[in-house]
Length: 290
Length: 326
Image (cartoon, rainbow over all chains, first blue to last red; front, side, top):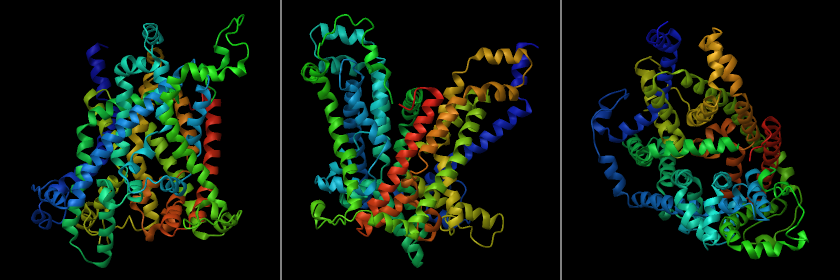
């Protein structure tokens, strides 16, 4: 069999075609909800009511997005989402990377004990009520920092960082220390700038967690500090009530909800190539460790 | 949990001279010498102590009649009263059953789906097609549960969702097909939505495992005349066995931890019978009805069983690949 004919027979066997077909259907199932929410967000009301079935885009209006910016609290919510994500992810990356680095140093006598301290919360958590009461007890409630500080450390990422730094070439660090740098200086001036793959993975994982979170924000701060996700929850709940009473303009409301959802999706889609690259890497590191 | 790299045995193989004659007196020296390193771990340590160990301490209110007015020290000790109350509460039993049932079904559906997806993707010879499908299946992993809830509520709404539009206008359904407020369908919706969100993520792990299989195995099999299906069955699947077993055990370990953010965003009173889980139950009790102690007792019960399952799962994983989870 020549190289060429084997190539073609491998490619278009009935089995291959079946696999491609199954995956194509799966692709549509995965992507359609995204597609639907995005075109609904820009579909003009007139086009909506003129047809009974809405399977694909029809017309364009930015009206619903303009509505979002007219709602002062909701618009502020998007600003808070951005602030929360950027500040939270930046602090979380610094705190996590430093701890992971310290735990990876073999000369520390208490590295082992510290590791145990970070492992226990992965197995045993207090649950919703004690966590809430703790945050209340230290007086963080109703502060912007209530949405940041309690969520800065996820032990799994400390262990991923530790694994990464354990493989970091020790000679480089040691030579810097011989040259008179302290451990802290060595970390900041040598290890940190050369650890972009790890830091990007951490930033992406913490960043998406901060961006996507909606439950705790609603509990911990008042509505004027809510991120957009928390407002979306409330809008949906309110609509549910209106629907139950037979009130409310359903059609415009569902496009409005789609527009809010779209504004939460679009930033994710923009940074998606980055997300995919670094998260896949992070999963690999985690999977190799795990 | 045993950390090979920091265990004492790796310190040095010829212990003729000991740097520290009295090991137990060295800890202060260690702190003094390495304090900058310890200082680097300090912020994370403090955060974990306050926000992870603090709530563990707070679990003790499960044994009190806690009220914010009386405070922690002013509340009366009541022993196991709240636990007894929980076990005779029909809503608690429903929530417990639903938590296990939903997680069980999510595992039964989601676990094989990820393997099948990875195997299918592995057979695709057209590079761009493979990467497009992979990108699409990973996409749901990155969005908020509240956004997913908004999407599916729009899709499935009985009055204007596209699913019902098609069913009624194309297939001639006379009654709306209700999903989100029908108890039985809600359960399956939660199960399949979970698969939708995570199947791409988990398939990546399997694809990584498949990529690490020795390619000469396939070459030998081809020489022996094995077709693609036989290669998958006899080489690929055994090659990812360890990964499969490990992930399955991890999923079993988390059976008791409900899919809270997913369900909280989408459940409503009409589906409590199948959709109310322990987390949502404790939330309503504790933070809406201020029955802090009762809710914490339920949470403590759940935490103990969950921790037991996870520890047990980790023990099993360790036996599978000798490394353990961490």
